[in-house]
Length: 348
Image (cartoon, rainbow, N blue to C red; front, side, top):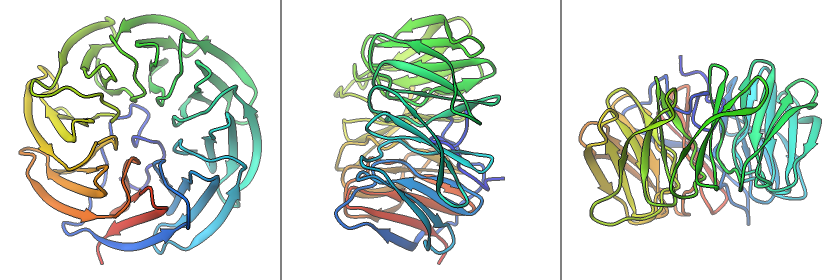
């Protein structure tokens, strides 16, 4: 368990929960630096390898144990999307709307598909297909093997999130202010829910409930089977847009906000359990590892918080601001910053 982190939020339901553990004391094991570049995208971890795209167009494979570079693939434009990894292949979109399938062993491109605008979200998988959204307002479904288009679904505005997959449904929270519930077999909308504001957050799913925040400063719990809002939460003290995707367990749902805080709510009722103030916007999405919540902030720090109380149990200053989210596997946590530094934390 916990051997890989193949997708933006760890799994197809985007729960943001790491299956393995992390050492109690987290220390930097290695730091990989790209001069005059930035890591805005979350990394993927698979087969003992870290895969990550940089803002200026480098796709890298590094050894998880040492940070040693295995290969590099360069593109003309950069990456703000996380990679998705499955069966020896990596799938990633760039800011030019090119979607690549790359062989993970050698970094060789196997095929390429052109969307019509930037791709910021991670891809996801359904059977033998790969699906992803683009700022051209479409959700694309391709054959994972060949890159051949199976179907495309049109929304009213940009799609920036990673599509969440449960059974034969996918959930897309759109910049058109709508949660789209789409049947994966033919790519048609089954139902939709009004989110009262645009969003680029990736919906997290636990059982029959989906959790997502919006630019409209509201956090939603939605019963996706009934397409009904269960509860909503707004910070009663000060409202700001939410760009952080939630992490959810049966006990807690946690997300960051531009109000500089990390919020924890009761998943069934939306009651606030705790909040923790950082010194900057929290666009980074939290990851729950055992009893800890790990999250980055615009203030350049990674925080470890007690999942029950919100009390700070660990903090590390990375320097550059953090918009990427942590990837956790094999007792290691990997996260990049805006200064082109990729940190790997573990036991020294």
